Length: 421
Length: 63
Image (cartoon, rainbow over all chains, first blue to last red; front, side):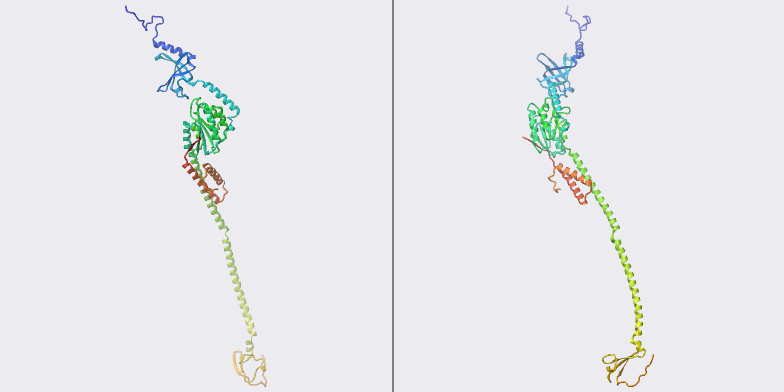
């Protein structure tokens, strides 16, 4: 007789035998319905770390006594801001689940932090509150940024991507600026004193207009130097304005709070530091258009004013008065010549009158009345007395209608018949 | 007002441009002054553009 294996399918033995799948399902149910196991926080050391091509993260958390398999799905794993490493102490949040094909249980981790992060958080909060109470974050401490910085100091690691980002942005936006790099480690114990020294070096220079304090993204530990009180106080002590750009958008550091302006990333810090040449060129163009328009209006105005003046000048021109005067002069001339002519004719007729009167008084009239004028023919002398004449003298005797000659003979003894007129 | 602007920084140029435009906008200038300011303004615009065109980012690492 052959030995009979008990049949798995047999319903006879009590509640009967489980299939492996059934059992596993049951265990899965038990574990996954326990609220205690569905919200687990566990601390341990990371080992057997493997990142699958799919992006999921597999590792084991262990301590001296035990180990537990962990998986972190890609969606959670890619939010990690630090690089978990083999041997690192970590704190994991998640839920227990069962993986039936292997019959294993595992912790599905949604959040993984370096162990001690909780302490860091507490220290961060404490320092922030203390500095806030001191007034280091006050708005009225914030200094205005220069509109056109000539020299921008940058505190960061020379090798870091942050510096490359800053350079790229400055080159694109405002290549007029000169960059002074004060190198400093931005991670580790040496970072805070080096950052402080770099800040002080830049701040001591008079040619620096603005300081950028930047670092790329990282875990809370990676960024811890920027939560250092020495760094915070060095930023506060700067006489030049400081722009911080540390980590990614969601990171906040103490340095961010103290800085005059806080940028979410190094690139953003560079953007805030300088004007954009595209906008500047547009503005310059607007100015040029404004100037051209102004000049056009001015010339228009001047031309109109000129035309106005020309009209006014024409209206007020002395030409009209000159014309009036000219006419007056003509008028006067006419009147004068008329008056003159009148006067002349007056004088002429007066002259005629005088002539007539003169004629009556002239010797002619006397001659006509029968008198004669006797002159010595030689001298032309008018004979007024007998003593002037000697016998034989030639005489010219003028009568009314002419002159005839005669010769004086002797003294006249006879009588002369007087003719009365 | 110096005629040579090659030594003017971008900031100085833009500052002077702002003043120039403002003075022109306020008016009350002689034609000669206006034209002088206008020409100065246009040359400042050109200078600023030239500065931007010629600029190359300089990076110096402090020891």
